[in-house]
Image (spheres, rainbow, N blue to C red):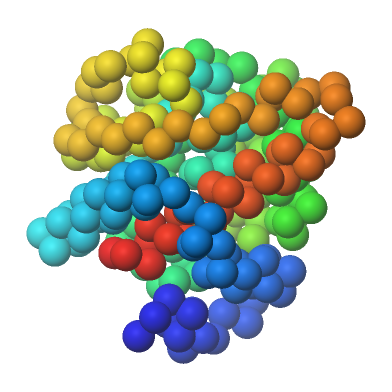
Length: 216
């Protein structure tokens, strides 16, 4: 049974239809993923399979420098796609080597995809990201990778930026580590291409994680 059939069988009636339609289009993006990245994504899929086969939860913590853009996209998409595909054994987290705030430009990109976002305000808002009418939202805010909200052992550390990969060669408690760096959409901040670049990065991450989960 392919991922689309699994999702159809689950009858996800309460998930936002804009998101469902967006996810349905991700399967067509496989050809745009380089073979090198496919190989790395399949290796992470193998980590998930091995944990599930051992009767454990598969915990993935996505790490970048500020936990403000790429790692947040990854955390949200892994949780949402895992739900969509019926993978209840997945747990998704994120963190940085520094604490800043979840960048508002990334938040706007998520809204354009179809997520609903609640912003409580503050210097480092604990955003609530809704993707389903009946499921509790994903709580997202900038934090260090070793924050108490994240797992401390038996998890995969997935490095989503080259800087964090270089500056944090050892992640305490991680039983697996893999780097799949993404270009930082920050490079387009304040330019005419800002919205386009954020949308492209959000879509790239969603498509690659969909490919990864379809290989579990």
